[in-house]
Image 1 (cartoon, helix red, strand yellow):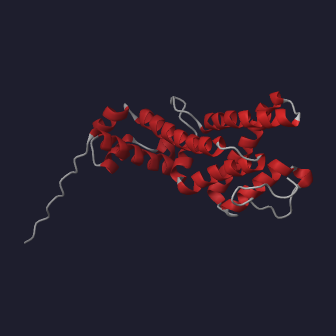
Image 2 (image 1 turned 60 degrees about the vertical axis):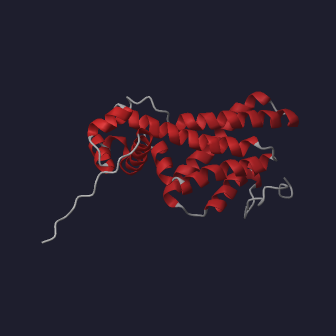
Image 3 (image 1 turned 135 degrees about the vertical axis):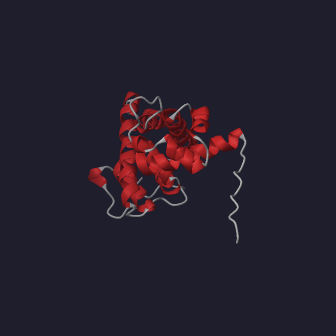
Length: 217
């Protein structure tokens, strides 16, 4: 008669265990939201006791705060990298739109965590505060462009909030629809932002290769 041998529990270093708990928390918060996720479920998924989770994060709020902060930093770094290199204004708009859509496509759980409502008691950042950080980076770029073109640089803040907010809201919509495709969505965003309603292109396309702007730009 054969007997079942229990698998020994894998021992992890403190750093490895913390990373495992963060990954599990990220997945659960994305799937179920903050309120529906419990420390018991996180611990069960990690095959540890609840005190281990408390030891690393102090509770569910602490785990959530670190998960959100990690996602915010990752997305902000993508925006910073994309907008730091010089380029034509239309090219910068394309980069900004694609950064968010790429993130949604590649890190769907992370984006779901960011766009869910944070608990009232949490000190974690929110998606709106992340968008504010991105808008401030865009503001500096727009201020230079406005000055060069004779516009009021003081209006750069208003326009940066409008542009980044538009991309963020469309990104939240695209998270669920995934249609049309990513490049097409980005092209339409740039079409509206760069050309305006009065001069929309009937079939907009990205500039491709992010070289010279399309004719008429």
